[in-house]
Amino acid sequence: VFWNPAGLALLPRSEFAIHYASTFASTNTALTLAAVGRRLGTVAVAAYIVDYGSQDVVPPGGGTTSGRISPKNIELLASYATDVAHTVTLGLSYKLIQFRQDCQGDCNTLPDVTGTTQALDLGAQVAIGGPDALRIGVAVRHAGFKLQLENRAQADPLPTQVAVGLAYGLPLPQPRDGAPLAARVLLDFQDDWGRYSNPDARLGLEFGYGQAIRLRTGYAFLKSESRGASIGIGLHFERIAIDFARVFYDRGGFDEPVYLSFRVLL
Image 1 (cartoon, rainbow, N blue to C red):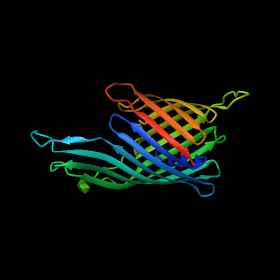
Image 2 (image 1 turned 30 degrees about the horizontal axis):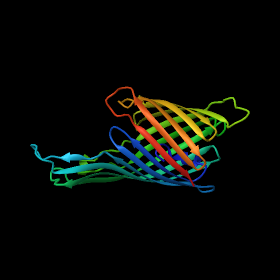
Image 3 (image 1 turned 90 degrees about the vertical axis):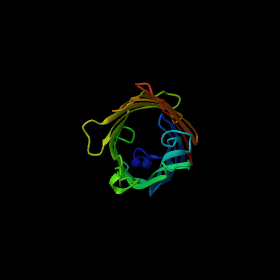
Image 4 (image 1 turned 30 degrees about the vertical axis):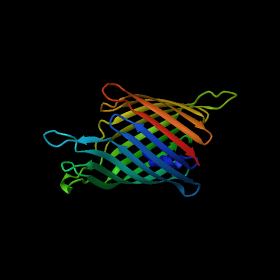
């Protein structure tokens, strides 16, 4: 839903998921529900909340605290994805995006602020050499109207992005007894719309034992302080799946993010 909506067409069955992330700037929570149809494709809805915490409001010149502000970003999404000839998947997400800053107490200097806009995510993926050999994906994210908080002249454009990625399944010798082994290499390039000369890059490796265990590691080559390595693990128990990840920044000074996902297959 959030990376490339075309990937929804690959879900084997319907699922409900809760995603949580704790970063140095915010706590992020997402709820998603995807319904897989054999003929009509996959439909999904999601709600995504980015909470930047609360901050005291102090009158100009100092003094006692008069209130507290709580800024948030909120997204509501509706997505659809389907496959074409079993090798190509297409996806689309409509997003209602809102930034709001609520204030409690005496907030004359910082009144409540709300801005709402709309955007689309478009995605496509193609499989080459079989469903698990090579998969190439393209996504355009956050393509929409400017976000207006005060007046039209000060409206901010959305951070429209273009991403191109691939996942390649590595051939591994298989044990005679026990669950099959799997491994994938993943590579992703991402840049702002219209700027493609110096994209951010992400490289990842994933190892799997049957459907029960996934071990993951990666590195984000970013043009920001957020570049660095990451590790993760995924566990699948029948209809329950849990994924955990941790990022390690190259440079100190920020709390390093932790990601947790809990999925229930329906």
